[in-house]
Structure formats: C-alpha cells, structure tokens
Image (cartoon, rainbow over all chains, first blue to last red; front, side, top):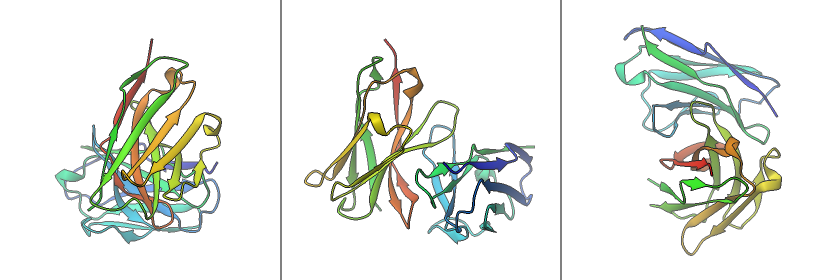
Amino acid sequence: DIQMTQSPSILSASVGDRVTITCRASQTINNWLAWYQQKPGKAPNLLIYKTSNLESGVPSRFSGSGSGTEFTLTISSLQPDDFATYFCQQYNNYPWTFGQGTKVEIK
Amino acid sequence: QVQLQESGPGLVKPSETLSLTCTVSGGSINTDFWSWIRQPPGKGLECIGYIYYSGSTNYNPSLKSRVTMSVDTSKNQFSLKLSSVTAADTAVYYCARQNRGGSFDSWGHGSLVTVSS
C-alpha cells in the first residue's frame, strides 16, 4: 500500500493566517491526490481533487499544489469555519489510502 | 445533489457478521462507483472497497477475505457485509460516491458500529 504522511499533525493558527499542510506519498502518485476537511462528528468533505482542482462550492481561499510525491494544501486566509482536521488521500493505486490527518486549531 | 444514508445495527457481537446498507437518493446508482470507508474512533480513514452498479467489486486486500459488497439497483442501494468481526472492527462506517478516478465527493453521515459482547 502507498503510505501517505502529513505534516504537521497539529497546527495552531489565528484567523487571517496563511496555512500550509504538506502530504508526502511513499511513491509517485501521478497527481491523483485529494484533500478533505472533517469536523467533529461529521463526514469528510471534499475540498480538492487531482492535486489542484477546487471542488464545486469550496471557497477559493483553499488551493492545492504539488507533484510526484509531495503535495500541499494552502488556506490563504484562515477563517473561523476552517478550524477542523484535514486529510489527504491518494487514488493512484488501490487500496486508496489517507494521511493520518492534520488538526488545525485556534492559537 | 446526491445524498447517501447508512443503515444497520449499531452493535455486533464478536465473530458475527456486520451488515450495513447505503441508500442513495437524489440520483441514480447506475453511474459511478460506490464505496465503503471506515474510521475507528479518534483515528484515520480506511477504504474497505467499492462496487460498480454492474456488481463488479474491488476490495482492500487487508480485508478481502472477510468483505462482501452487493448492489440492488431497483432500490438504489448498495450493501456491505464484514464477517468474523473483532473489537478492531469498531468504527464509524461511511458510504460514499467515488468520482473522478477515486476521490469521494458525496458521503453518508456515518454509522457507528461497535463490536462487543
């Protein structure tokens, strides 16, 4: 299985901050990478697919980039609704696998 | 906007079979791929497998020997069976639509299944 490693595991930030989360794959995944936001007690919500494509309805402050084995999710200006846990997911090789998550908390 | 809803028992005894059904509304099950994903309490996400409306399946090798998925297009439903469960199978089970090659764009609310005697 392809291992996905996110960093950091916990990120403390303030409203208005620019936030970057990194996801590294154990082998190349040909940009087949998605990002999700999950709030407590809720299902994950798709933010980004195919590395950099914004899902319909997702605010433009979210963006994704990367290639090969290293990918990033950036929130340009953190909003109160953005405090949550974020997961990356590869879908180049089955079984699709997720990172362990990055919790974005209030500083 | 397609909606998904899981249903099934919330408590299963060790060694028995976990059974869940996902009902799809607001769209037809006769497109895309349909998945089951689980999340143990406080932990990360694990793909269990997916099924196409034709009935073709792909299971996570780590669970393959215990997993069976099926689809009922007349009811717009798909189902999961996981046999010989242990406490390690305690998790929130999500059904989801798999789209654009493998990302999940619609999810059910999740169903907590606890394995305990």
